Image (cartoon, rainbow over all chains, first blue to last red):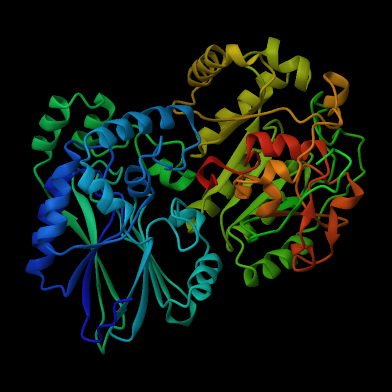
Length: 267
Length: 295
C-alpha cells in the first residue's frame, strides 16, 4: 500500500496493448500537468506491434504498474490471454494477437509482468483508491457502463472499503458517482481507439482538492497513429486491427459489447 | 466417488443475475426442445405481477444484483411486460428472452424510448433454430421461422440489436456452415450486424421426447469440481423468481428441490448439483448469460 497524504493528482493509464507511441505521449502529457504519480492498470501487451518497446518507457518514467489478465498470461507463458471472450471470431483474433505478443516479449519483461501485483491501493488526499484491472473481484471481468448498476458498483466498492475504484479492461471509459460519496471509474485504454470513429485514445486524471473532492478528467491522446499502422503492417498483424487504428471503429472483440455500447460503433 | 454418493454443493458467490419467470410456462408456441415444456396450455407456473417484480427489484438493491433477465414461456404474452421492462431499466440492465412472434409496434416504440433514457442496456434475445423454415419449423412449429424473422426486423427498425439465440440442433461438424448461412439470411432480411448465441440442448422437458433424457452417469461429481472454475455454473451467480418463490436456476424450476425460499436472501443458500442439467451447465458453462456478461 502506498500511503502519501501529499498525493492529490494522479494519472491512470489503461490497457496499453503494445501501443508504445500513445504511451509516450500520455506520459509526457501527464508529466506536463504536474501529476504526483502515474499508474498503469495493466494489459501492456496485445493488438499492436513491438511489445518490448513499452517496458523501457514504464521504467524510465517510474510508472507504477499492476497486473492485467494479459500480463498474467504472458508472465506465466500461458496458452491464451484470458481475455474472457466467448465468440469464436473474437477468440480467433485474440489468439493471433496473443501468440505474436508472447513470441516478442523478452524473458526479462515476462518476469516483470509475472511479478506485478493484481491491485494497488493509493491515498489520494482523503480518498482511499483501489486500482485494479477488470474489477475488484476478478481480473478479467468486463465492467461496461450500460451493464453496471449503481447498487452493484456500490457493493463492489463497499466490499473492498474503497472510496474510489478505478478499472480498465473493457476499452471504453466511464465515470459513475455513487452513494456515500463513492466513485467508480473506468479509465479507458491507450491501446486502441474507443469505437467512436476517432483515432485518438484516452487516459484519466484523478484529482482531489478542498473544493472538489474528486475531479475525474478524461484526457484524449493524439499520437502518430499512421506510424503505428506502418509498424503493424510491417509486423504482418491482421488487417482488422490496422483498420481499427486507422478508422477508430472496432472490427474485432465486438460480441462482448452490450447493446448500448455496440450500437455506438459502426460494426 | 460413485454416482450414488452425495452430489457436490455450490455456494452462491454473489447474486449477479436475477431472473424472472415472468409469464410462467405459458407460451404461444410448443417447441419440441423446450426444457420446461411451455405451451399455450401449460399453466404449471403462473404469471408474475408487476408488483411481484417491483418488490424483488427493490430487494435486489441491497444484494448488489448486476443484471435482470426475463423469461417464460413467452414474456410478451404478459400484458404488463412493457411496464415491467421500463421499471427494471430504472434499476439496471434488462434482458428479455422472447420468440419474437408477438411484438406490437407501440411496445417497441415505448421500450426504445425507455432504453434511450436509461443508463442501462435493454437486450432482446430472440430464439430461433436453424437458418430456414425447413430447419426451424419442425422444432418450433409451422410458420415460426418467418414470424420470428419478422420480429427481428421489427426490433432492428426500432434501433435494437437483438441477440439471436439458437439451440444447437445440427451436428457439430456442420456448425461453421450452418452459422454462416444463418448470418447471411439475417443480413438479407435487413439485420446488417447480427449477434448470435448458440446454446447446447438440455435433455429435459419436451426435449426428452425429441432426443433423449440424461443418462444416470451424466452427473457432476465432487471430483469433477476439483480445479474447475465454478463461476461457470449458473447457480454460482444466479437465482430465478417464479410465482412459487425463488429457485436456484432457470433450467430447474420444475424440480421441487430447486425452490430455495420466498425472499432473495433466503435463496442465497448453497445448492447440490444433483441433476442431469447440471452436467450440461458444467460442460458448457454460462449458458444462460449474455455474451457481455461472460464469466
